Amino acid sequence: SALTQPPSASGSPGQSVTISCTGASSDVGGHDYVSWYQQHPGKAPKLMIYEVNKRPPGVPDRFSGSKSGNTASLTVSGLQAEDEADYYCSSYAGGNHFKVFGGGTKLTVL
Amino acid sequence: QVQLVESGGGLVQPGRSLRLSCAASGYSFRSHGMYWVRQAPGKGLEWVAFIRYDGSDQFYADSVKGRFTVSRDNSENTLFLQMNSLRVEDTAVYYCARDGYNFGCDWWGQGTLVTVSS
Image (cartoon, rainbow over all chains, first blue to last red; front, side, top):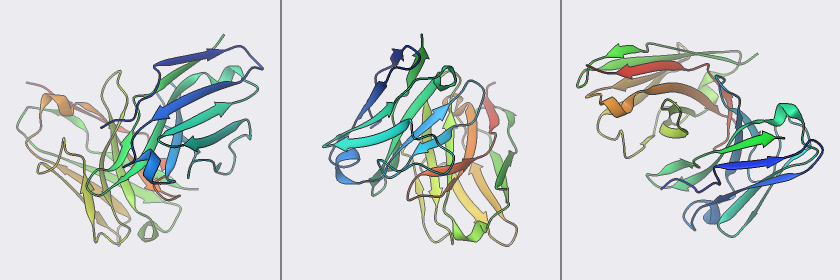
């Protein structure tokens, strides 16, 4: 089953916003292989966080990830206009399900 | 510079077949697992298939199992997705992506649109 994300989130420039991603013990809760992706309209997704809380090269440290139990979270600090995008979480789910995505959260910078 | 370029999308009738390709360059293709991920118009991301770096294992989403086949040619640095018995609900942009960080997709192609319609 897909991971559960809030459909929308918002914040003003400079503020922080946190997006949640709820799964189950078979995916988010059972593995430290949660990743987060940013997608701007008409563009391919971009990896922002992998293995729960690690940033690939070039991703600003304003983006951070965490996990507690079956829920992972992405926090964007010091919001900037360019952070306005859709954000998707994903987790390794093991076995035949292998990889699962959340439904996506549209982040609006007010 | 890593580059992934998909091709093969287009308009196809329900029940017909289509083969997508993803040409990789700028890195050691044979060293990385590869994904297919799709996105229906106005919808979210959906994992479709994964193939290990050496092609030894493949995994599929339940929605495509038995109809889609992922394969790769490491000598040609190319990933494939054979799609049979296509359905209207398979309409989507199909992305190939590299497994760079333990189930994290660190590089993505630009996507190719598949439209299934009569």
